[in-house]
Length: 81
Image 1: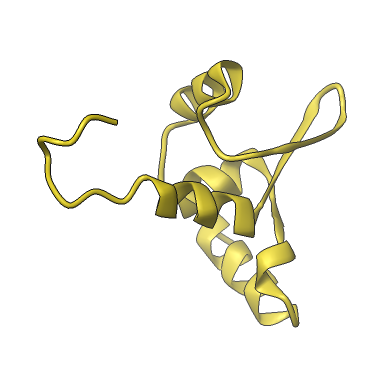
Image 2: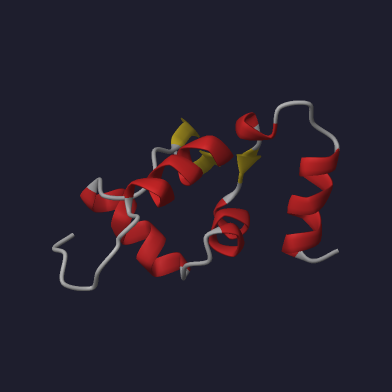
């Protein structure tokens, strides 16, 4: 099963898709964004909110990724981020 198929399966099995938690590979596929860039955004605090239930585990809620993406909406390339 591919990562995108895994995401689609999670979406099918839930009543509230906003609360789905994505692993780093799933978040990379959902956004889409390379792992290194996502890690850098975590480090700088400029990326989507994330959960860290253990020292080596990072999870993203779908709603946090969606909110972060929606906040980046632009109407012109001349706008400063």
